[in-house]
Image (cartoon, rainbow, N blue to C red; front, side, top):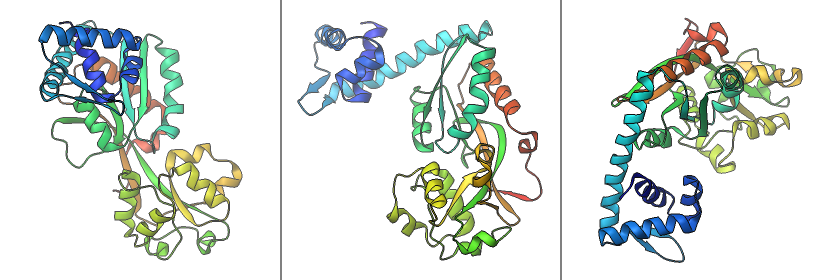
Length: 308
């Protein structure tokens, strides 16, 4: 039994597919299948049931995979401890980022980090908050950039910056002539909102007490902020965008932006790691680079803002 074989069975378990597992592990499917069959022969137990539709673990296979995850996590931790002792910035660092943060933050710091520290292999994936927390627990991610969690048991949240929500209004909407938007101004408005489970949406719905939230989801599900911006620009309704997005807008697009009336709803973006995280040198580098990449005014919550 080898760590490589354990890596293969964990990959098959997570993907429920041999070809996808092989791709993740960087080997051919026949190689992966042969190594798993060799492990099954050594154990004298079948770990997976293979059908034309999917791959499922057997009862004992489920238990073996769970133990394999612990062993692999322990082996990875040994390597991380050694790298941290050397204050090394090299090696792979897997970072999760919220889809409502990534398009606006990554272009600001990622190129700089790659240029200043080419030895760091930073790999980024966009996930929702629930998926991020699960991936951190399972060791799939090393850290994540997301909005501050109300509960922090088992995690460490390192503050990065504060970001206001702003309103994006179509030219034909009654709110276009307003200089600022009060929460009750949004009642009865045609809204473009993200699906439930996006903290960006959930925070706004809670702060603004939006009764039209469910109707908005019926109209368009699985949308993105960028999609909804295009709908507004086409003369349809209202949506919301994060503050960092403003610097990417054209002059014409900025004409559609309206601030919230005081207090301005604001989210706190943090770097999330597990309590047993050890790559502190890499984490500190990431935090420092991100903080340098955002406007200084966003590093503190001012008295006109309300964290949601």
